[in-house]
Image (cartoon, rainbow, N blue to C red):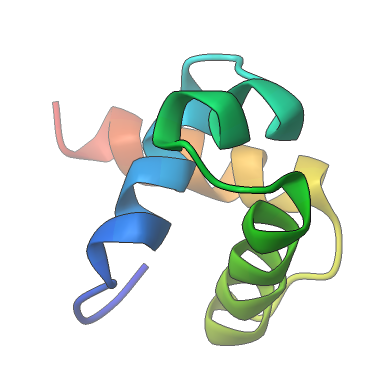
Length: 67
């Protein structure tokens, strides 16, 4: 993902990369699951994907390149 992400979105993407569900991520950050879903939709829009699996695949590729 290019540019900067708000801390909540960065935390969510990190949690998803670690295999956490949206429900688990919401509990970790102390917010409602609906809030996490809205953050996820914002991330989708920013990176041009429409499915969580596409996002994870993209993040994994980017993550692997930065190692």
